[in-house]
Image (cartoon, each protein chain N blue to C red):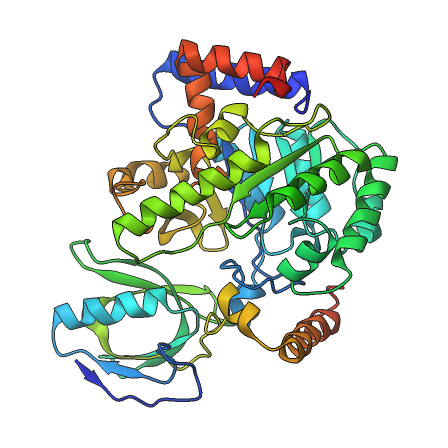
Length: 131
Length: 338
């Protein structure tokens, strides 16, 4: 499939910034699996000309009409089911929230980096009123 | 005895009823995740990495109560995210207690002291405090200094107010057995009702031989930690699950035993893997390809020995075999005989 490789600052192995334009149903299925595993929002271009951005949280590739389910911010209803055949492209446009969050990455960081990251997380929780 | 008799009786009669009815797959503990947002960001935690709009979603009290009714499990565990961030958590808990579910509210305890006034002590409600070891280990695990002391203060206050309090601890292969045993001493000295322990889960793509070695390493670690248990230690979980962790019993996973409901729906197939979502509990049970999961069947499951898959297997063993029942009875009455 076409991978436009709009790479950003995300770490190696992250799909963040990439856009896939599948040219067959098999490639669509492959791109959907990547989107389903991705811990960030994706942007879908649909055959209808519509573009929507949201979090892919469900899919059924074995259904008679394979579909994905997308959680769309501030929409009502907040989720929408889309058939694979409606998908023209999938862009990994949102931040990959899982990138670099492994335990191994954490312990390998310098103490000063760890303290700075912990302080950022704490400040964010405090701003939201969660502390 | 770590688990009160009334809770033991409820679980035993529930399991026996399911067996009598011939129900092949029944839930034991509903894992209810009303939100993913947390006020910590523990390294390696796979539960909270989502975009903000997902983290800001909350299950309503009505959704939580309906999920508990629909599933029917006698025990409801509320992990997350951090449940105490949910503005209606006390209402959710009250409704579940009214359904006579045994609720385990899993919390890092950062907000617990401040929120305790909202909760009434009940035999149905237990605060399950996340504690991953003594001060140094816990603060490192949760990536913030001082959290251990906050949690200890909250435990003392909750106990003072008559609440049931347990701890839940995730251990990885690099844990120091002696430090873990000292941690058990410290928790029991605080006066908690019991402790829950489990190995961590790590997604593994390594070849099978390495998987095997990893399970062996887990068994070795838990054997060192749990052999010759001290008289005062109480565990709020099946003694056969602890046997399993020590390599003394072997089980297949029972993923439907701890079904998970969260802002996306009913999670397939288990609390740890996200292979899709069902709209209803019945759809979860009927459409999940259960035979695709388990230690020897799926590489994502190869290393897993986590409580949410195997505690139900241990309970099934207790009620499904004479040796399991006898061993459970022995270890319940004489926990130091392990």
